[in-house]
Every structure is written in C-alpha cells, then in structure tokens.
Amino acid sequence: MKIIIIGCSRLGASLANLLAAQGHEVSVIDPKAEALERLDHDFPGRTFIGVGIDLELLANAGAGEADVLIAVTDRDSANLVAAQVAREKFHIPTVIARAYDPRAAAAYRAMGLNIFCPTEAGIDYVQELLQGGGER
Image (cartoon, rainbow, N blue to C red; front, side, top):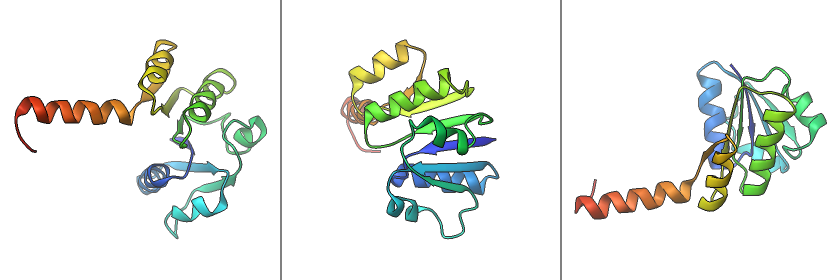
C-alpha cells in the first residue's frame, strides 16, 4: 500500500517505521526537519518538510495515488483538516486522524471520518481497571 503519514511525532515515526518494515511505500510529512530524525536511519520511505494541508506538498508526496493517509500531528485542527483534504480533494480511500478532544472526535466521526482519540482510550482503560477491580 501507499501510505502518507502527517506528523513525525513518536507515534508518527513508529507507524512509519513499522509500516515501511512491513513493505508498504511510506511518505512522511512534518514541518520540522528534526522531527524526521525520529525515523530509523535506514528508513526506506520518502520524507517531506512542510504542513500536511498544503495541496502541492500532498500531491508531491503521492496523495493522488495513496491508499491511506494517517494524520497524527499534535494539533487536532491540523489532523482534521488534513483528513478532510485527503478525503475530499485526493479521494484517498482510507483516512485516519488523531483527535485529542473527545467532542471534536465525535463530531468528525459523525462526518464519516476515521478518528481515534487517545483521551477516550485512556478514559476507557481507567474505567476498565476500576470496574475490574485490579491491574492488568
């Protein structure tokens, strides 16, 4: 698969390294060159310095042929706009975005976007532990 990852945080870099090691064609976009240093030294994919909502940059990164776009910057708004652009402008079949704010996550899910929310996951985990009465 051809995958574009927007945001080279610990999560973005880990996903890029894993997916590239699995044989996928991965491109990573981040506005900070130093963030791209989180990638493995032998990362086989392509890297781009810039913002993930720049149409020209997305086109250069292969958005027109991409199968998946994953937006995992540290800003909900950037992730959600990138997800909408990927879906509406480039018609990328699978678009996944991170949203820290549970209300924003719910609103964008209602629009049909694939959103994961670490805040919700943390709440669910704590609730599960509290209801189960112990540690895992």
